[in-house]
Length: 392
Length: 89
Image (cartoon, rainbow over all chains, first blue to last red; front, top):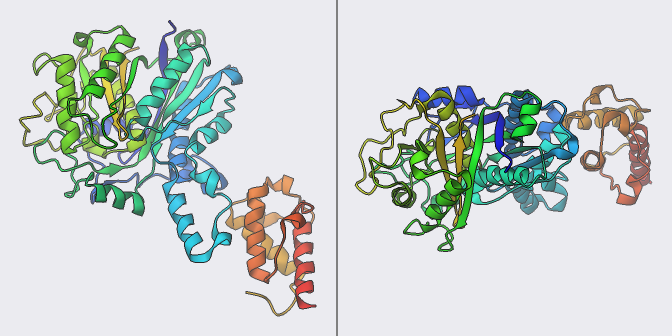
């Protein structure tokens, strides 16, 4: 079957822009979280697009455009047939800021106060559409929404699209800008976010996730397409597995059944054995439920500590980027392989007896010869995606 | 707010430029009476925002069927002045 390789990467997070500076920040044990959120405070849309384009795009789409442009520049895909280029860029919630502002205007001032740009800014597929316009990609395009698993699903489904022969190149990833009043209030009301405002995955004191924002986008290509044009191959999407918990709309299956199924499917897709995996980039949200159940699932797939590979959570440094998380974490996984370095789990000081794997709390840690990484993404709705990332 | 007096061409042109600049249309400051929307890359969504600004400024109402023949700055200015005059009559 066609092998799917990565030739470009782009990132926007609270720890800056660009895949390499972002990984450097993780390795330096820096945190992008302040006052209980992880905002991309230094993001300037007009660095990436014209003032008119910026005005007509919600923040979630602006992030995606910036990340896509970085990935496109790195991939430099010359000679691509426009009909063979596709886009799969998802978001958990779409243009929430636009939604809130226009809803308030409509309630206060009526119909005339609603912007004609409301729909094209709010719609979740806006980011994918704008990216296709920017690069002239005429192949298939859509947005995926599977809450916090969106980024993983987008990359996995892009892989499938290339394997089915529908595209030679896919711009794929996830984006989220949900640090808005209603969304923050809603997650707080659910009890999903940390009251203390600290992201400490797998720590006994963890009390919920910290919301972050940003995007990550990859350029994926059929290997023969990338090789034929002499592109630098940065890594590969070796495996993808997806599943449903079919259990509860927000709580994970208590036995981790859906997570286990997705991870095993990704390994099978990659033709890999559990023992081939040298590192797991966990979903690791810092919620009491996720971290306990994800640990249970990892034990079921990989065995107990000693046999299971080291695990760490990027969300400890930048918070939970919802629909962007899986894409950001795929980029981190690829960098870990490229550099032979495992990023740490920050703020893990009091181990939880129910979370008994090696979470690299004192990292970064050298991992020479690291070849395969599993990256997990589990969404509200019980929707799970797992990726196996491998070296070039 | 409705104006008491009928605006001049210069006044409406200035208001059009100001609104086009507010919605980040490139070249808005240099727009002239004979500038067409196609030259400014103004599309139907921009036009909705421009129309709302002109309606609010001059207390007029521009109906959808009056929008179709508006192909550029001069058309918008002329329509605005005509509707403002009708308002006063």
